[in-house]
Image 1 (cartoon, rainbow, N blue to C red):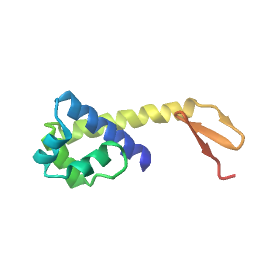
Image 2: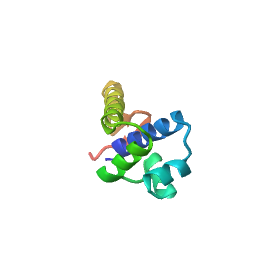
Image 3: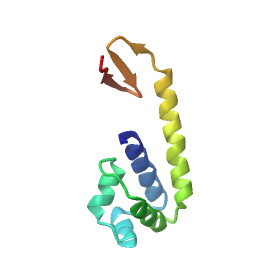
Length: 102
């Protein structure tokens, strides 16, 4: 799910920056390639549960806290979508226009 992937990346990046860590430091600590972590943070790649656990450990962030933060962000996005008026032929979702299948 692209929405979850993007929001997870945002949360992981925020956590990394709050700790003052570089991608290189997280990469070394988690034993995951720097490029792959970068793609996860940008919402371009999915993180497996094992990889996510390694990243959380490297960031000294409980997995449950990270997932709760992502869940809260998903809820905010869903609320924004629900509050957006629907027009004929298109639907706006949190600032983006998505063509309908009709």
